[in-house]
Image 1 (cartoon, rainbow, N blue to C red):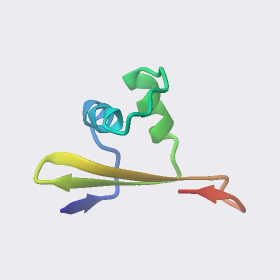
Image 2: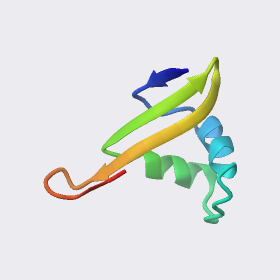
Image 3: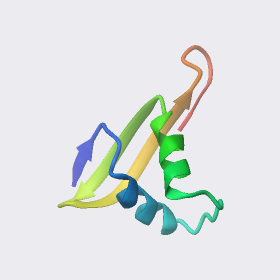
Length: 66
C-alpha cells in the first residue's frame, strides 16, 4: 500500500465513492469540489489503483471531523 497526502484523480475518486453505496445525487465534479475543500486528505493506493481515501473537515480552530 502507498499512502499519499494529496487528492486522487477525479475519476478514480468517483469510482471509489461508488463502491460505498452512498448515492448523493452529486456529479463527479461536485464530489471532487467537496473533497478539494478538505483541510487534510490522504489517498491510499495498491499499485496504481485507488483503494482508500480519508479526509479531515475542520474550521481550523475548534471543530474537526474525520
